[in-house]
Amino acid sequence: MSNLILFEDIFVVDKLDPDGKKFDKVTRIEARSQNCDMFMHLDVNTEIYPMHVGDKFTMALSHTLNLDGTPDTGYFNPGRKSLADKYEYVMHGKLYKISDDSSGKGLKAEIYVSYGGLLMLLRGEASHVSHFELDQRLFLLIRKL
Image (cartoon, one colour):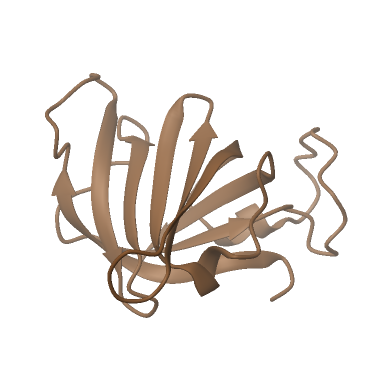
């Protein structure tokens, strides 16, 4: 299954709506990962998946939900086992921006993904995000610990 997961780490929510509340049903979380020292802003539909400061969760990014690694067809098959069965909150989106920052210590990189208007920024060491490509389709999968 490791070839399905492009990135995975455990995050802890540090702040909710750091720039102020913008939408009724959406909360922007600010979180930091425990293993890879990654920083993340993520918009979450908190009406269906509430998040709180101090929540610990695993977040994974994958190019497909198919357990055999085949590309996603875009159709949901409720009887078929998938990677989503192991998680509680899943979104599908498109990577729309990659940026590098070589100032300071080490090479840092950022990826930006839009999940139907819910945005994610993931920032950290370039080695953790170097295998992502512009316009790549990604599934975000979250499970609270």
